[in-house]
Length: 260
Image (cartoon, rainbow, N blue to C red; front, side, top):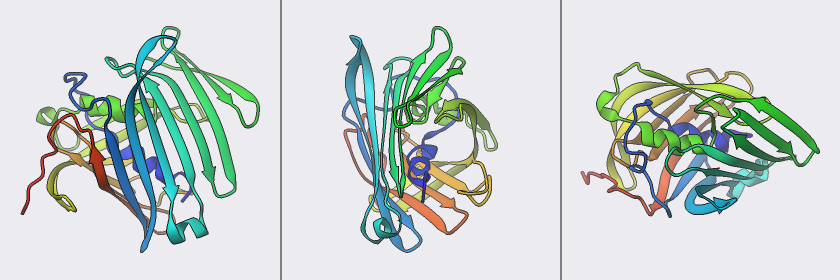
């Protein structure tokens, strides 16, 4: 299950880059919780909490994303991950990214500072005492800030089936990579809350050690102004995983649910 929590937290949060009001999708205090299943196991829970913060007297949004295995799954593979992102409220530009990982016997502590004026990112590997410098470009995102950036950019009116979106992300010391996804259309999903109209996407991922194929992930986000993830399904190299929205609080807009 290594790295699966991260993908299930974030890959579901992307859409077509068509600008809307930069404050339309979320607000201070939003909290989302997801339940992940690995086969028949209730594998873990993941949360995202958005608050206001500041760095160097600059007002920012601060997101803390946590993922943790529970029950039987923690016996087979223990995961306790924390990701943090600080980004600007108006332009959704990441300023600082923190990744603390405990997965099985693996631990990691990375911190990244973004310099948008000079198109640079500076990464510290605090566990191994290493520093990295990366060239970036306009629109660069970390893997958490990308969620909020793209939620603001989704415009269902202009989406066409087969549309592709590619953005640049910085995730670890492998550097900047392009993230690509395809819009597949709309679908009504039955959830614990009721029936939710969703936009369906397919992120393209690297096949091999983690995912079965490039087209292994399907994701659904709410077809409303919130654009929150409702479900993610992934075929892994071994088994499959499913993530469902379990709870929410502090949404900026009405969550459109149909009680059938």
